Amino acid sequence: MVQNNEPLPINFNNAVIFYAGPSPAPEGLPIGAIGPTTSYRMDAYTEIMLSLGVKVFIGKGSRNNNIKKLLVQYKAIYCASFGGAAAYLNQCIISAKPVAFEWLGPEAIVELTVNNFPAVIINDIYGGDLYANVSES
View 1 (tube, helix red, strand yellow):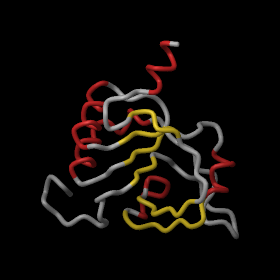
View 2: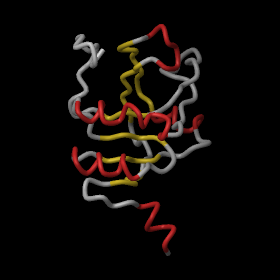
View 3: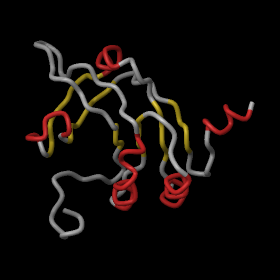
View 4: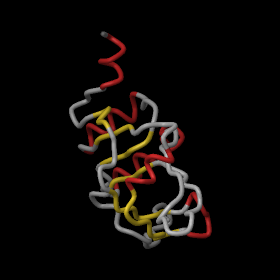
């Protein structure tokens, strides 16, 4: 859509993107189990998302040097949440509203409202890398 100058279905300015593939919502809950997915699989789209105004990415795993440089350039951050805790993380979701590409199921873009969602800043706007600091100690 961006490459074809087509209008986007949502505004990405100052957005937080959570790389996740949720399971269907059980009755009475806004969403099923939802845990972070490996972030490097989205590297090809990161610069486009940053250029649209995304400021925070949440996923799991480390980011490559090119992505870290882009985060500094666009003054954005990358956070990690806890893999293997999808059943716990869904308790932090207050509401889940599909906003684009609903036909893609778990790959749809869903607007989440969260409360006490656990995430740790891994890469900051200055080039800091918590994973590198942890592995050095």
